Length: 375
Ligand SMILES: [Mg+2]
Image 1 (tube, rainbow, N blue to C red):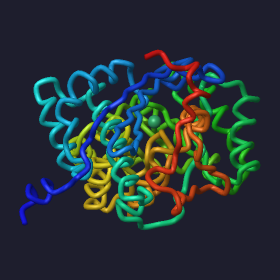
Image 2 (cartoon, helix red, strand yellow):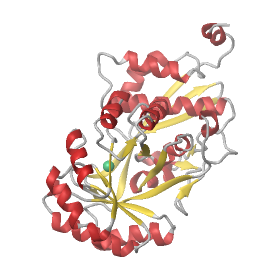
Image 3 (cartoon, rainbow, N blue to C red):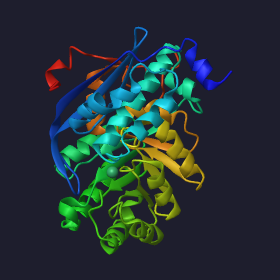
Image 4 (cartoon, protein in one colour):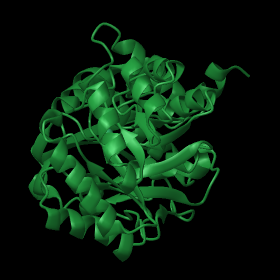
């Protein structure tokens, strides 16, 4: 029987796609080396088939909702809810002339994740089992330490993760004001180390704020604070620069959060720019492309770390053999706890997707979050 004949049998079809936009204020002003913000926009996609709803989302511009409604719906509606790879290909082909970067890639990602959740729920399987589980336990690291925080805020947050929740690795933002305040960066790094004690791992993320040599100097001057992860020491566009920093410092260099497609990840790996590749399923093309990006990294003997959107990544992370960890990003973890019943608990430094729940295991708290909805 051909694939087309199989599909023609009685596959459930995608009957409706519902898109919502929410804007959630941060609980305090947030900033990193190259951006600042006081709210987060979440575009939530729900796909319906046979009375079952699948949910996916992205943290992107509100325009993602229009892209889903005006463009992606045309190639997704009324098609098989089981052939996720075909749905993904159709979306990618459909946007050829518009380009897959930016909001379009975010929109495709949200739909793809929703379709995977739908399929798992239709088949009454937890997402990680449908996709091929490889571990029950997904390591996480606490991520926040914004450059806008006072020493007291930073210490409370990091101390809460390490001493309160027993999470043995945390990350702070550095590169304040485009790398113009290195002394303050170094002071905050040192205070972070004092807060978390000797045992926990300390990560930093400059969001591309430094020049190559500045980044190396910062890493060397912070030597006694034992950094084990230096994310985007220079801009991710400078693959050679990332490699130069990587060669010069002890900490692992990481990047990849802006990757929109497989060639992006391949180029980054090929240039030997990173010790660990970051992949974000809310940007790169959902779970479909996340798994492929992880495979691409594996072919270079690299591990991957999931960037942000922790509850969206938990299941796919549990299917990724070369996973290092998932970023438990303060802002997104807080939003997902507000939005979903079943949001996971990172206490102990790992999350455990529930094998008894279908799909991603989450239920939208529709009424509780109505106040944040703008479209
Ligand atoms: Mg980052």
